[in-house]
Image (cartoon, rainbow, N blue to C red):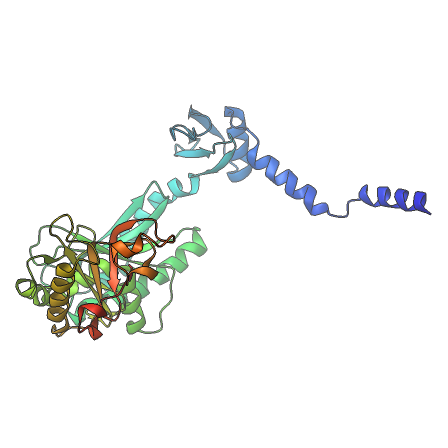
Length: 368
């Protein structure tokens, strides 16, 4: 009985019970197989696109440490030059043939398109093709007329109309050429007309109304949009800087203004704003249990509470708290007996329910 059972198990194991394992193994092997000689590349392109090529340069597999190599440059019989990608394992992982072939098609499509005046309307002055060779994508770039402001209703109405037209272009291009535009960009030089801000929206979405379109546009560009469309709000809030204690200031960085929007309802409407403030003083001033710092911070909180704006969060930078915030109700001396606390952490913290703070004892922090 036992012998028969053993022979039965051996027989079962010899059968292709899980054929997909073999298929998966073959696929993994082909992915990691080092095949990138000139002949390998020519064979690959013949099979993939039905074209004959001449290999102009072959750098071999990509170097994981230096990121050098990892491609070959080839030229098809029709003169098209393009790149063949080679991964770190030495296997061919794709090419840019269709992308390079598409460049003149896309340029000609835009040049001869009779719908372009309807895309521009009275709001935009120029429509150009943007080519990203690194990502192998095409986008369209619209430039806003100097007489049009982002806050004008005419801008959003024409932008939405342009989006709908170009979405139809994409449908035609995908059916006829297998090509499409990835993004619709808008260039705006602002009030000073010196530095161009570029906004974008993906052309892969569908919208049922201009309100949905505006909301998606705002969320895709929230940081830049919020500041650009709300300069009066920024100026208004910044006017309270002089009322803060001298140890506090509105904190602004290159990539983060002192106001941050958490819920951008429309390009000029945010219902949940965070205000960033910084703290500076002596070496001991920035500690959470320093009573002078807490008094100054309370003064600042009371000033900010008086601002007529939807500021729902207050973020404080440059103060030090225990690395386990559970114990922030203890001073540093008492923390010496708490094993869970291993040190102080100077970081950015949000004051919990800052609108309800009335005393220094109400100041409670959590990580930003």
